[in-house]
Amino acid sequence: MSVDLRVCFLGDSFVAGVGDPEYRGWAGRLAARTQQPLTCYNLGVRRQTSEDVRARWRAECAPRLHGFAGALVLSFGVNDTMHENGRRRVALEDSVANLVAMLGEWPVLVAGPPPIADDEHNRRTAALNDALRAACAEHRTPYVDVLEPLRDNKNWMREVEAGDGAHPGAEGYAAYADLVWPQWTDWLTGR
Image (cartoon, rainbow, N blue to C red; front, side, top):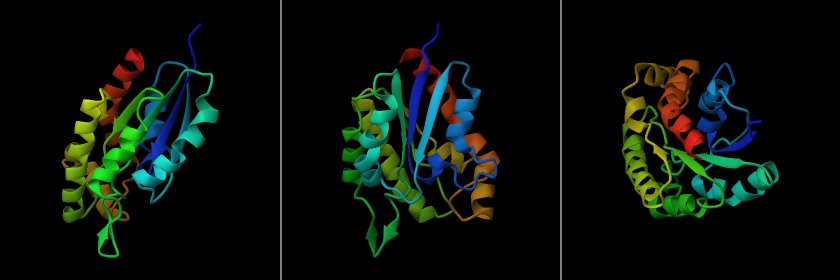
């Protein structure tokens, strides 16, 4: 008998799948393709930063995972690098500290922040992406870098530009899921 793995997907609007007319986003697409018993909880919240996710992650995950085979998929960063009131919403070093604080209690897979239709914002996100990837390497946590591959993906960028400037539609989220899929399957197997 196989174990029913419970996975909490935590993060921002990209985790929630905002803009997807199919309401699956990349997290739902990963779950749908998985060939093992799996219970997924999509805990993505619009406009949330790493600070917001850090403030709620344990309270939301503990009742869903306690006593079961559980794991986390974390993804955030675009809102951290957003400028509001003349400054970045979350300092780079604080974003990294927030990520590190969520590692260790359950197995974690981290999916990096995607690009949006704003080159300056993407430059800030690229610096954060590098820092998050380095922190994951230091803590032996798998990290999926989606920033450059999605920036080069015509479906992702076309849908982002045609939409609200940040979120893609179904084809864009399918491209995101395709990038995460190999690491996801390795992670599930090796957990």
